[in-house]
Image (cartoon, rainbow, N blue to C red; front, top):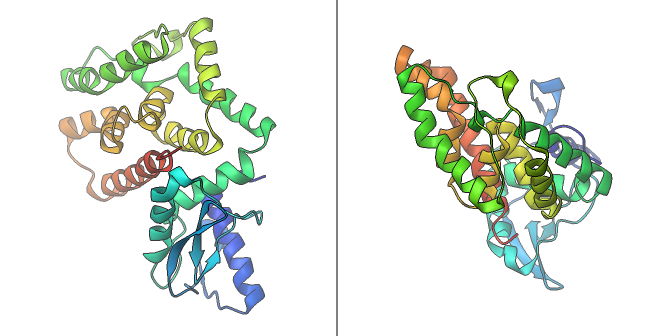
Length: 270
């Protein structure tokens, strides 16, 4: 079972396999000095084997950190090629966070295939519903109110209609309380998700700080860009008021869109 960052575990796993094969890993990532793996394959591709799609590195199928083969359903051919693309675009060293789709697939196989882990994840995600940023609506400044109306309200209204639930809105985080019936309905929805769709929702929700934004994304109601704009309502309001903190905001914007884009792509064919 993978706990924490699946991408980091993947990097450690690949690093171990490289050392076993005698392949040099000469650079380290700052995060706990995880060895950075030098690219050891010439090409990445996709093969169809036994009715399923596998991503290959020099014709060898990739595996999860736990050693399980990564096999994708016939409906996930596009996803297989997107994952292959992640590996093909690696340069001299594998980037620590440059395999987001691979990480989600590994999380779904090594972690969310376990019923206990799934139940824990569903419980964790439902807690976001009771502090959901899309349900917190400030009354000022006007620029923030306008952005909330533009990006939060359509998602809230979609969720109300899609799941037939009540969703409370408030300007006081400590006063926000969703009904038991709404929570139980969403619990049943999440319990019915495939492991990969749940992995994508988990990552999107934690990144956006909103279960509703995450749901709208993995259900393909909004694009990754729409989800990012909703997740950054407060940041964008501050930027309009006080200006752009160039380097920090640029990095945050790119990282968020990479995560949300991967979460959206992971549910293709799911």
